[in-house]
Length: 138
Image 1 (cartoon, helix red, strand yellow):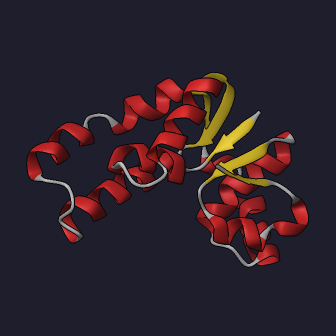
Image 2: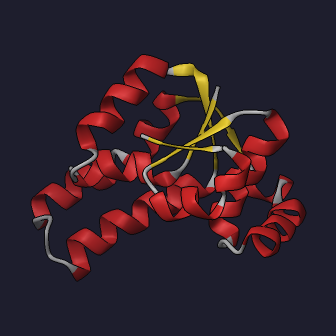
């Protein structure tokens, strides 16, 4: 079982260098083995915004289509979306404990609580949590 962070969903949205691995991972583990935190919707949308508005990497017509896919992509990939508010106190403590953002810590906290691995493309997060052997960088 895996907690999937926004880097996996974002990769599919922006078609970065990890896109094929993200698609393969989500397809092979679809729904029954995957959960995420509701932050994934906002974080994935923010990556799409950044690539469309700031970096100008995604044309307007593609952006308009992709923005409608954020919610369906995440909802069709996981069996459960956990509310961040259920994790916030522990996530804040873990963020301080491990020196990571509260955003990342929400996913980490869920993984720790459930005894799951964290599926992510964030190699810095993996390095920060190396002692836990928790983060599975795809």
